[in-house]
Image 1 (cartoon, rainbow, N blue to C red):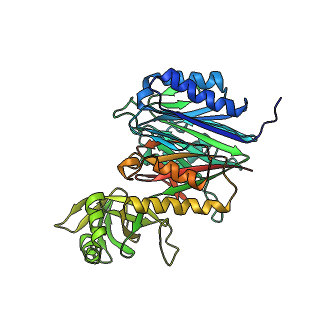
Image 2: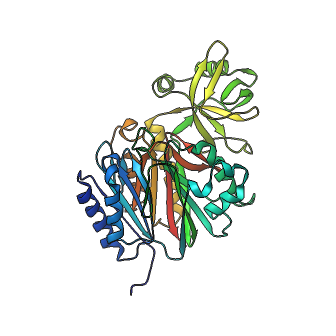
Image 3: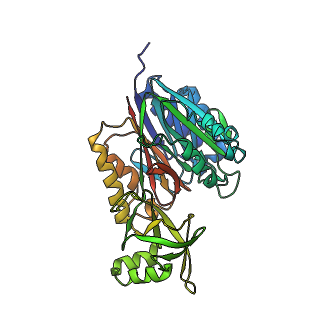
Length: 400
């Protein structure tokens, strides 16, 4: 009998026929795994939604993993390809000796009744396990995850000197109405809700969140706010503060705001003298009241927070991702990765196909990586986990 070892393999197919695509992907992965698959991560495009059962049955027949997790997406990615607006199935298989895999669903969490019962949340995610290494979440867009995420994030926090357990994932994106998406949990196929997977034991998981925005102007303090509306910045009406900044912007930055919109970055940790990329949680400006000088953003804000205006463009997004990946060169090569990229990226943002996966593979040649274009990306900034837009959220797995 072979000795179990860390191993990973990934394959992606763009065949239209579900049976043929599933067989191609799983056969390729199985030939590399030698009967040692603990986890299969699978992402399926909307073209195959109604036959997802074929994909899962093929995985169990040929790979026999102990755990399966996945969902449907508007497009999928694997190794060096992002299959946009075309059929796609990708499977990432991992052998993880010494790792316990625990799945859970929204039924185990029992939200929102567990809102005042953090112990219920901790039990569902194995948060009290001393060797909890990470939690992966996949959710249907019609599940109220925005209210749930802060509670889940809080129970994953450790002591002040210890980083929180990383949580990562994405929102299924293949359907336009409730019931159209599929979430895969072992041999169960769900058309809504939330599924999760906790990793405990001998694995290291590192998360990267590339927000693809850069700050402009200088940091400002919110001096007036109500819910998601910034009323004043530095004692001036919010719009007046922006207009002061706008005078100093380059023509290119003005064009970016006109084309891509304006963003506001909220500082995650106030205990710094200087702020740069990675120090902000970036949110869209979703409304302007010029008469009263107000700015509405896609997040709750409060008086005393430090914010800075941001712009977004392909070059900034590319540089941001490369910068995060460059830091990985100082660590061992990862075993595998999963990618959750915004469905507004891809060729909608970049002037080339396969941008995110090819950038990752240039930094980590040969890395088995699978992912999908999400309707929202889950990943940490600082010590807390958030739901993002416009980002590439990556989880890298390493042995111990």
